[in-house]
Image (tube, rainbow, N blue to C red; front, side):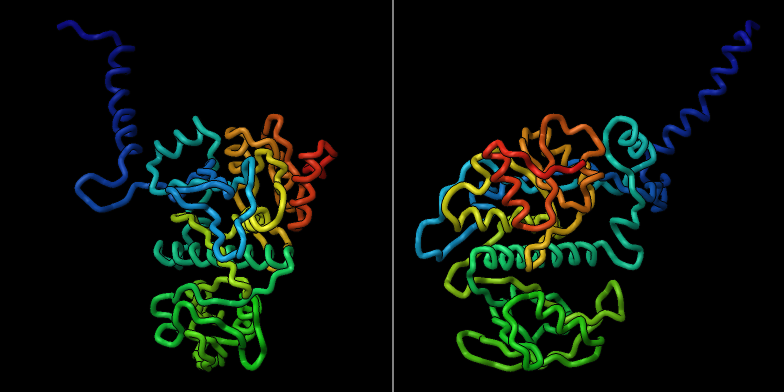
Length: 355
């Protein structure tokens, strides 16, 4: 009987475990079982970008009504940037993204803390996004010199506020202290413990009302009290600011949202008609805070043709750690810094940049 040469026999037999391994790393579960074979990592990469001066699905991303006069015309682009997150990857998918893309692999615990369900994480992200919207409005109104009030946007299901507060309630006082900003309400609540009571002075359907809420526990930390509401900040002069983005979470759009509101409610073009992108949290006092995944946001903005990128000062070294072409990356610590950077760039003056 003719036998294959030894080398060929070795290759023939050696291919069996290789093929078996390839099949194993390509499956997301053990065949015939519900045992997962996905890796405990997530891949972060460039996400979609949104022009906050433009529309999404036929409605303005930042919509302003009741201004008493037409909203000021805008030009150019003012883009918020995002990070895409891929989970439930097989080993082969994770290796493929690591080898063929600029994605960053991070432990899955950074995306979904082990003590929280996916639904709880998504709810937390929605709360952070809603809080960033409220802070963006307050910061913009402070810059424009307009007064604001605290409005209950939504009630968290099964929370302390359920059946006590209603969407549309205006919170004017906490424990006898007047409030007109969401951050003031949060500070008063966080000074307490779960199980403590908080007295809220409201305006409901135009009528004053007082309610008492027994605080619950934050699902991420049982020692942290939770009222269980999403708050918006609305100008008291009849202006209504709405942010019309769905399926986006986290607080990192705050600065860009605030800039878009200011641009629409003030004469002239805040961005000088240029293509500007950026990221950063915003506090009610206009402080710009750090965010995650900035290398991917810079990459997405550069690929889209942005000329200027507004980056939180704390993220500067990471923002310039990869090639960003001719796009200028400005260093900003406050809302005023961001406005100055756009003005300087449009006028051809030197911009305070990241290095």
